[in-house]
Image (cartoon, rainbow, N blue to C red):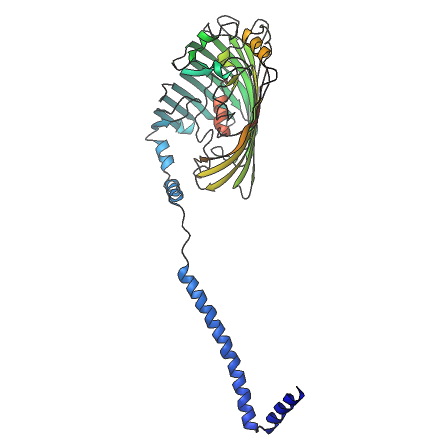
Length: 457
């Protein structure tokens, strides 16, 4: 080691000044040459990557939906010509796909009057007609007045019997036809709050079901078990409502809340035997995160009835549960009783413009029916209580579902994007203002929520 070092020192000592200078210059130029070679290599790799890069491409379906939204095709189709347009969908659960003409104008008398006239018939021969006049610009926009008349013809409403102990084997059907005329007046003391009275009339006709696959309800259940199945009547109804609406977008809410409380009294005008009080509460809250691309939607809803002595709630106006609107995993109209309680929870996330996905879990609890005030325990309830050792309960598995958003144009299709309003009168008891409130709430999806529900009496 020492010998080698000595040899190098001797060689450097023997070099003349010009030779040493040349050696140093050669060493200094060799290092930059190596560095330039590495830079050239890196530059070459960058160029190769640039050649291989491809622009990000969206799927064909996403591109088509985006194009429809950009050109506002859904809005143009729904607007029609001078208010005349086709009205699609919006039938009651299990009513089929409805279609028919509609005349809708919200600019009459310089925007002071909104009018709607429509008639629909569905693929299952269900019919619905609407005549509505509404003014929202009274007293500087603080007062709303509305007149609403509706006609429904439902020939195949499913009925399984009274109470949560009803059996699937008892599936039957009945015809329900109703006409209604209602008036409501709303006062808005502060923004997002609306309250006021309502009044109106409801005429009911019940008959044998038209679905030949199942027995008619009047042939399967006696009047002692099912109030109102053998007699037609009419109602005068009146009540009041209170609503708070802080939704960011009623057509497809991602944030805010909707809280509705309303009370209505139904007076039987013919027999004085089927009158009842109806209390409804509908609470909805939307909790966004991740820049509103994720939403937790919560809902609680209850319908509670009460009767005077000698009165009973007719079966066709009793609250019901079942179907994709509220209790997924059960058939539409699966359970009916005097009172209902429903809790919904859903986690939604946006896949791309026009398509959302949702996770939900259904875990309903059903309580056995008890005698109604002013009525005796039905034979069907006694038979069910004798055969059942515990309250009926069921759990549906967790599930992921996809559904089209009728919005990024307005975000997601929901109860008012417009999932057309549910019937005012039947088969679920509705107040004169329920339809308007449901349109304001936009809900949902009505349609794919359930997390927990209960049917009570």
